[in-house]
Image (tube, rainbow, N blue to C red; front, side, top):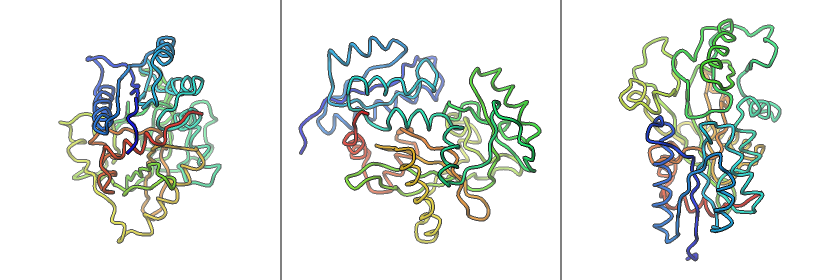
Length: 329
């Protein structure tokens, strides 16, 4: 049995008026704290904002054995997340999850797609406002997304447009409304699958693979896990997106390929602790990487926790494994 530790849980500052996606961090914090104290550890919490001098002073006055890094945004900006891990690196405080470099690269979906393609992993064609328009985008739907924000912010049926001709106007409109950068990628018609990974004594372990089923979606309605599906419990999208696990025997070849690609993502982005890779699988059975999520949501009703349970790993033991992998640099 290991000696009790002090694990400081850092999370983004939120108010009661915050949106559901922001308030979710408080549930994650409570669940992590319960898991840690259940193992005999001390688990104080601290909200993080732009006042980094206060954080620095706290860490020096009360140095923890490790930090559990739950910071998903600072001042409602996802781009600022790596600042916290960068400070922890500077102070040589071990922290959970991915490194500053991994957070920087995966936190920019366009940059991550360049890395994926450079390393031979399939990812859909894309366009961002800073690039020349593609000369031959081809037919078919495109989907518009924030470059750096997560939690499906701004993602609804209007995010999917009929063809590329509608992309520049949609991107410009969203950037004007929401004040952060957007891009577009070719919409992969097919299955929505994500793969969770967790560190272990022998390296990263691929957990059982869940798929999101879109039940009773009318023809033409985009099959995406948008904001409503994640955060609006009384919406059609939330009620009709159902998680089930891919049968590892019946679909052994697909599971093997998804695992291979996910482990390759772990390698090329130098992930650690825990991560999730989101895929679409097209009609030919080919997986395409959508996003690489460093430090994904670990709420008890999220996909990562469901994958732990499917693997026979308790939530508390999963948290302990994540803490065991904590380091700086």
